[in-house]
Image 1: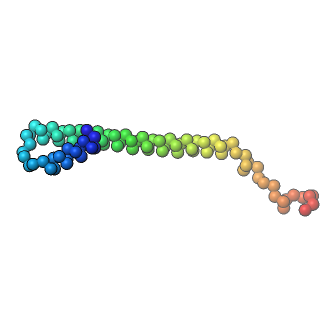
Image 2 (image 1 turned 45 degrees about the horizontal axis):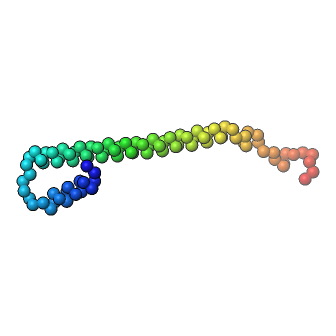
Image 3 (image 1 turned 120 degrees about the vertical axis):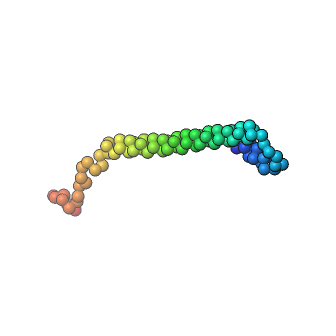
Length: 91
């Protein structure tokens, strides 16, 4: 049962004449609604976990790439030469 089926069924139930439903039919409808609700919750939970894991894997991957590039960077391994301490060179 998808959202449009449920909406159609609820609209039909709201506009129907108020007759008493047989107990077996009412129990069947409520069981179907509970089952669909559980399925929707599991689906939402799965999608949420999928998005969380995708975000975490992206962060871990970016961190690993940044660390690998930072270990190969030699920019700060030797101090820069300063003009003040150069002796003997004309300015």
